[in-house]
Length: 542
Ligand code: ADP
Image (cartoon, rainbow, N blue to C red; front, side):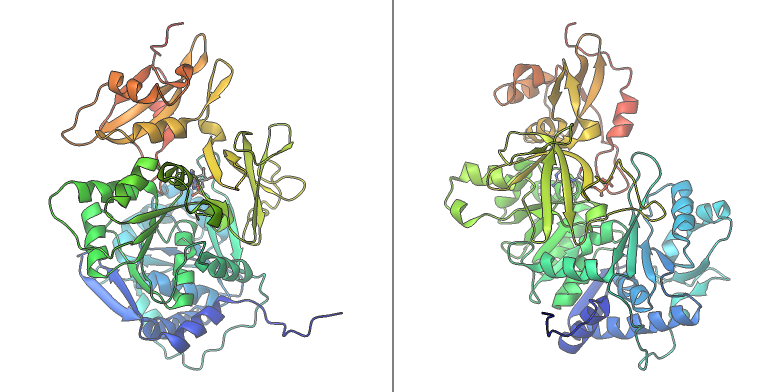
C-alpha cells in the first residue's frame, strides 16, 4: 500500500516562508566593525533574501552552481545563507582564516561563479585573486559602512531590484544547498555538500527538547563562525523557529561577547571551548560584572570540553551543554542530555556525564569499531574508532565520491576520533587518532590529561602532545599556558594528575608558553606544537 500523504520536497524556502508568515518583526542584531549595532528583522531578511536570489539568477548563476561567501557573522551573511539556496544555487562559505593557497584551491574545486565579500576582508581577496586561473565575479558588502573602494561592485546595488514576484525554482530535496570544506589538517581540504533535505531535517532535530531545546522565545548568540560547519546550522534552525539572532561580527573578545549577552538578553549561545575559556576569564577577572539571563544555555563542542569549565560556569548560573560533531556531520552528531533514570544521580556522576560528548541524536547512529573492523560493545571500556551514519552525514566528498580512508564498505563515516560509549549511550571522545600518544605499547589519551590540567586554578590552557623517547617510543609533553599573574610548577601539576591517572600516563615533561597556536576554527593546533617541540628531550629516564 502506498501512503496517501502529499509528496513535497523538503526545502529551506519553506523555513523562510514560515518565519516570514509568523515572525516578521523578530529581530536580527549584528555588531559592525566599529562595534555599533545594526538592527533589522526577519521581514527585512525575507525581502532581501528574495532580492539576492533574483539577482543571482539575473547574474547568470545557474541551478547547482556554487556562490562563495567571505564574510564575518552578520545579517548579510544570513541573507546569503538563505538567498543563495533560494536561487537554486549552492552556498559555499569560505573560511577566512585559511591560507590564500587553500582558499584558491577550494574556490577552484567548488567552481564558485560569484563571491560575496565583506569590504573589511578585501585584503584577503587581494592575496587569493592572483592565484586563480579564472577569478569569479566579486560583489562587495560595505560592512564597515565606509565608501567602497573604486571599481568594486556594491552588494546593495546588486540586490536593489524589487523581488516581490520572485518564484523559487522547483527543486528536488536532494539537490545541493550548501558546501563547506574540511579544514585539511591532513592533506588538501575536502568539500562536504549538504542538501535541502539534510539541512531541514538537521534544523528540526536540532531544536528538540533533548537536543538544543530551542524555540521562538530564544535570543540566540551565534558565535560559531558562519564560515565553518554552517555555524553549526544555527542560522537555519533559529530562523525556522523565529528566534532572535545576534551576530558578533569580528569581535570575539570575552568582554565583547559578554556585553552582547547582557545587552541582547541572550538565552542560548554556541561556540568552541576556547571561546568560552576567554568568556570565563573575563567573568573571573573581576573588572566588571554583567547581568546575564539566569540559566543561559551554551552549546559547546568542536573540541573536548573540560569538566572544570562546566563547573565554573555553573557557579555563575550558566549551563554548558556539550555536543560532538564534524563538518561531515552538518555538524550535529551527539549532545548531552540527562536521561530520566539519571536525573537524581549524585552531583559528581552528573558532572561526569556532562563532561562527555553526549548521546547520539535521533536519526544519527554511532558505533565504535576496533582496528580490525570489529564492532565493539557499548560498555564504557572498549575503545576504538567512532563511526557515524545518518540523514545529514556525508557519504562522500565533492569531486571525490569514494575514499576508503573515510567511509567503510557498509556505509559508515570513519570519524578519525577514538572513543568509548557507555551502557547508557554516553559518548566519550578519548582523542583524535593522530593525537593519541603511544608509550611503551600502551595508548595515552591526550584529551583526558589536558582536561585535568586545565582544572588547575592557575592554568588558562593546556595541550598534551607526544614527544619521542628512546625506550618508550613516545611520552606525553604538557604544553601549558598560565593565567595572567598566576604561578604553577610542573611538580604541582604532577601531584594533581597522579591520583587520577596510572603513573606511566602522567607526563614527566611540562613546558610553559604564552599562548597555544590555534587552528582556523579556534582549536588548539597540535600539528604546530608537535613541529615546535620535535627536538624536545623527554625527562622520563630511559
Ligand atoms: P577540524 O577540527 O579539522 O576543523 P571539524 O570542525 O569538522 O574539523 O571538527 C571535527 C572534530 O572536532 C571531531 O572529529 C572531533 O575530533 C572534534 N570534536 C568535536 N566535538 C568534540 C567534543 N565534544 N569533544 C572532543 N572532540 C570534539
